[in-house]
Image 1 (spheres, helix red, strand yellow):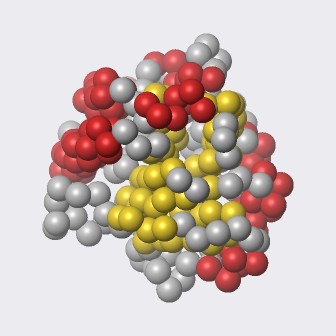
Image 2 (image 1 turned 135 degrees about the horizontal axis):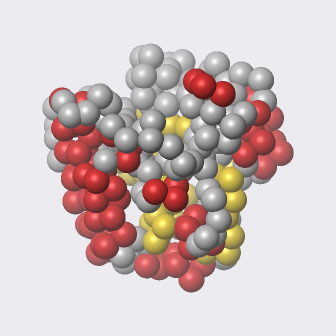
Length: 257
């Protein structure tokens, strides 16, 4: 089973690119972030024509998350992260696919920091940690996939001082990610590639793609039941070099049956 995550940065704007990648990569499950489309604007027909069923939660201009399943329909279980009924941002969705609970998440960026956006980021991650702990304790096979907007370690960013004040690398942000690992979740990409340089995002500015000035922001966390099923992982870097590309690229894992 191949599970991918992709911050698409505008699903309709990048639709041609996305469908080309989908056809070539043939993932069984795809978690999308930053749809930047309302529910009605989600390209359901094009995705169905590519062989995928989908569940999604859109939002006008910003945010938005979706889960796609090849040859079937994801069974929707949740469309929001619990813990704050006043939070209307579309950043979390859960669905069951082939016996695995899949969560697609798009954590807040948090910039500028300090300030209310950073406070919201940390509060959102606390809610994620609380919900993740409940999911982990069920013993179910669960994948938490998406754009966490956290660079977990210094090796997950190119050598630079330009991000020193950025919310993505702050100690509090990294501690939020570490909280999930301390619960027992497995960082799948790092498990498969413990020493390699791993980037999933290259900013559009300052020729960062051309200079390979990247960051690792997109992650898969696996529950205990899936640890031994992890068979492989990868990052489709070439997608970033295409015309009209997202600033993120797809990352993926494979699980044994």
